[in-house]
Amino acid sequence: MIFDTHVHYDDEAYDEDREVFLGEIVQKGVGRVINVGATIDSAKEAVALSQKYDFIYAAVGVHPSDTADLTEEDMQWLTQAAQMEKVVAIGEIGLDYHYDEPEKEVQKKWFVRQLRIAKETKLPVCIHSREAAQDTLTIMQQEHAEEIGGVIHCYSYGWEMAKIYLDMGFYLGIGGVVTFKNGRKLKEVVEKAPMEQLVLETDSPYLSPEPYRGQRNSSDRLLYVANQIAELKNMTTDEVIRITEENAKRLYRMKK
Image (cartoon, rainbow, N blue to C red; front, side, top):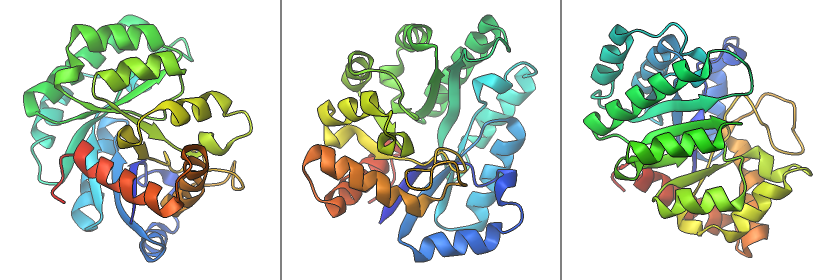
């Protein structure tokens, strides 16, 4: 069964047909998904979806681009939410320097704070890092993130950085970008990385694979991602789906 390790099905892109949409993806071979928080409100919605649907689990955390107004009260809520039955990770957290705001120091402060919540609650982390490779790695090393574990979501850097994260025991989240013509760097990472440390993700509603690029994404489209990985690794698509499902269960510490 397809295990999608990163979705945002609470997003407004699904407001008009969410219930029908979620029913359809299950019929198309999707076994489990992790709905990932990006703000405190969306983290609460992720938890609510996990309580409503058997196949949905939640990650709670605040995306770096939404850290400007965070408070210690928010961190207290995250710590409590992390102990709920179907909450399996802290995320997505990290650094994003694509835009000038929030300030880098603000992002770093809350990244460190959420890493410490993950360590305290013994949950893995879902890391977002965009145009912030060295600072992300430095903070993770300083906070001994190898003791926490988790996934580098939507991995976008080169092999040299990937090797460091893999050696730390992290998984790499592979999604639609690997099917893009300009996804050569990610293809190289997939070729070199051990299959046992790769997981599938869509980042729905974003990053739909070819031939659906630009459209609203869906977990069942991971079949196209699995096809591309199979080609790069000289495996069958079924093998890729089976191995990445087992990897995801191990990543999120789920019973088999």
